[in-house]
Image (cartoon, rainbow, N blue to C red; front, side, top):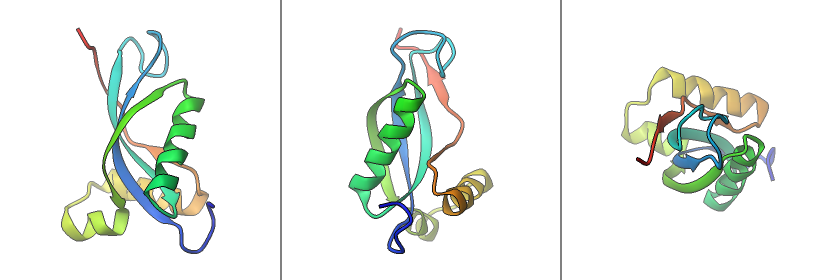
Length: 106
């Protein structure tokens, strides 16, 4: 559905894991990352993020604080890097990831 005029930029916080060390997350087990995608609704957003993470060989554990970017901007100060990523999503239609904040389970 990407590209349909009703699509808008959505944002959320993803918890991700990698199956083995030394992948996209380096030597870490998991990470939190702000994710943005052009979507028609929350379900579409989740599917696009899942697909993009699969390409990185990462597993989506959960998504939090999912909402349209314009709703986020109306309630909170949003860092300029996230605003830049939102513009990138709008122009390319491709999901974008902010910096992965990695951690280990043990």
